Length: 207
Ligand SMILES: CC(C)(COP(=O)(O)OP(=O)(O)OC[C@H]1O[C@@H](n2cnc3c(N)ncnc32)[C@H](O)[C@@H]1OP(=O)(O)O)[C@@H](O)C(=O)NCCC(=O)NCCS
Image (tube, rainbow, N blue to C red; front, side, top):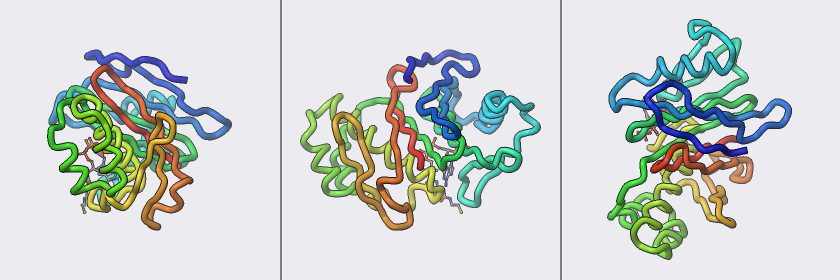
């Protein structure tokens, strides 16, 4: 189920189940964010409220490369967040490994050049076939978010290599079709693309 989200200056404005069956539910929430301000307190507050515990009861830790995680008693949950422009997107999932990324949509005149440099050749070619301008800018950001969401779920970060995973559009959605063995099987990964607020694109990846 998808619902529109709005950007306001207040706390959580959207909490949406995008998948819900028995023990695997994913939720995301969009928050106003001032660039450069700490994200942990906002994340801690929303995660705790969503899990129904006091913020100080949440055991929020960081892996050595910076990936956030929830320790006991919520170790069977996973979380990730991303900030861009005026927004902060936080995701929480149960029984999954997840990563989320969002980007504010704006002109990307170097999209093809960046894709040639950092993406795979088929991804570059897909992008080159799009109409220059807004359509291509969005397509570039969709790919970027998809790749970064998987890499954030994995935890290594961008230095892992954006070219080590390849997305392709099937229907109107991007799907991971090929990846480095360190990421496991490509078809184990799911991707949900959405617009967390007007003027932003986002992707949530999980397995
Ligand atoms: C993680 C990374 C992909 C985020 O890129 P970004 O587009 O600049 O930022 P986003 O807003 O989308 O995400 C930032 C959030 O990702 C999370 N994050 C940081 N490192 C992460 C990692 N290795 N894996 C997953 N998530 C990570 C944090 O929650 C961070 O927010 P915070 O710093 O406010 O807490 C990028 O910064 C990166 O590749 N970092 C690698 C760090 C690294 O290798 N460090 C080595 C130190 S030994």
